[in-house]
Image 1 (cartoon, rainbow, N blue to C red):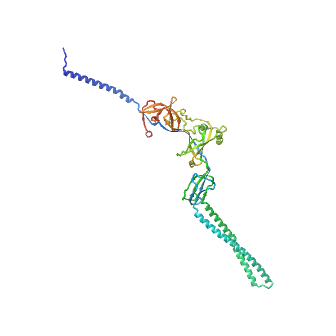
Image 2: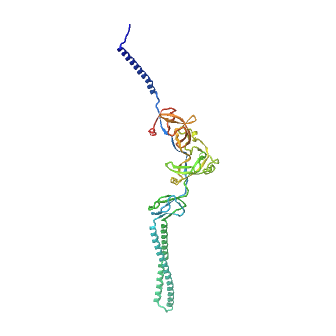
Image 3: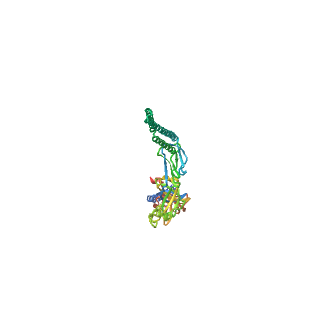
Length: 444
């Protein structure tokens, strides 16, 4: 029996074949998608990290410690009365000698008082001199009157003189005696002495309008302005020894070996870290001198943490201390070395014997590639970083150089345009997927 397909049957067969092929393709796609969806269910989420750019900057190796501002002899000059400042002849920072004029005050009132006192003294002195003359004259007159009285008494005894003349002579002597007694030179002398004291006081008041330096040195601070009225007891200025303020520092002998005269230093108070005063190392004592100065034992040794005076003492961000020359903190007998630091004049404002923070710049390099210390870690004896590469952490070996307070020099292994991961280093490895989060987001 023959089976013959017409045109309509062929069309039906073709459609059936196409339908079967389509269903097969759809089934394959569904089956192919199922494993992918299962994989998504078990996929590890990306690690959240912070990154920092590799940048070029000046880098400083710093030795951090504390010190004490050395006591410097100084004197503060106060106003003795309420007067206006007429002229300032020496400004802050000027050198002065003992007795050198620093300020001139308004002296108009002092001059008037002195003139009045001198005039009064002149009058009293004239009165005293006149009283002396009058008393001398009266005493001579009394002596003559006594002689005349004696003569009259003799005449009266002989019967030749009159009683009336005798009585008049006696009355004259008594009158002169009273006049002499009335001239009290002691009272007048005391008045003259008081007047002289008043003149001296007026001269002192006038002298006080010329304010001089009580010591040789430098004007540390000028507390007034021209034209300002200064009340009694208020400070005019402060003068001190003419030498820069010095900070005394005690370093371990190991740390002191890194310090040299002339190295730049930053000094500030812990309470005001933004107020930085510059200085430089001016003196490094021999260990023996330091031992004698600090009262150490004969060997110049004392128990002390050698980490004192170092800016970093342990692994930072996983970076091994040996890789970047950061000292480990251990307790061992050490010799201390006394170091002096000369600072700018502004350090005097911290106050004598004030405790200050000291940063000695041991070494610096200009415009080198750096990354944060927290980006570098130690792995199998190598210094490595994780480079952020389009959502993936890529492990990279680097060569480190100078270590700063917060950054480390990268000699080889990184380029400036790259970014390094600075957080969650323990949670990632080469190839880990990562998402970047900002520092603000990390804190919030």
